Length: 251
Image (cartoon, rainbow, N blue to C red; front, side):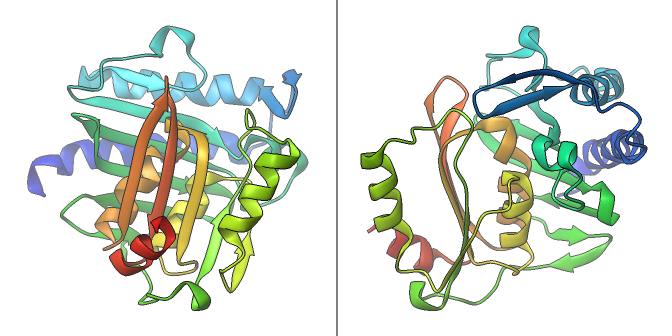
């Protein structure tokens, strides 16, 4: 949609600048490690770059790292930012499995998304009801409609429940898929759905900023997206190559 081209351009430029900083790997200082989560100085520095550039738009920002930006009113326009998605991958040097994620939402729905998979020089972007691209080339979801043929990408969110009952329910939910992949970055798994590399992404209790941009890109690529806020900024999220696959997974 032409009305969002300027916002998309700003988001792409911002994601590139933040990604260029992160590619330097100049600040790998760990601020904290609590449970299964990790916070790094690089997250804060990436966020400061993003916040400074997006400030020019006058649109409020919901960001993972900035406490003062949390709980914004999503009834109007709002940027939703993850300065590094896949922080632990980045920390451990698992190249290509971390990214910068920037989304614009309105009325609690995705408008556009940009994801910079900076270590692979892959810039994903998409405007809902427009099209999705990777480095300027259009991408689309796969044509898979049956779960027995589908590859699922999923994960365990840092604040998730790991008890035996929850894990048993998780196994039951995923066992019908042909293959299952866990990549440690919700944003990257989402754009893999958009580009047809996998056929579904499902994760419960994931944070909104982890999936906000990928949701927009997956929709722009022709996918089916279900993203429901369930507790504060936590959500239940599913991205699917087709409506048929979404219906099977939700049955």
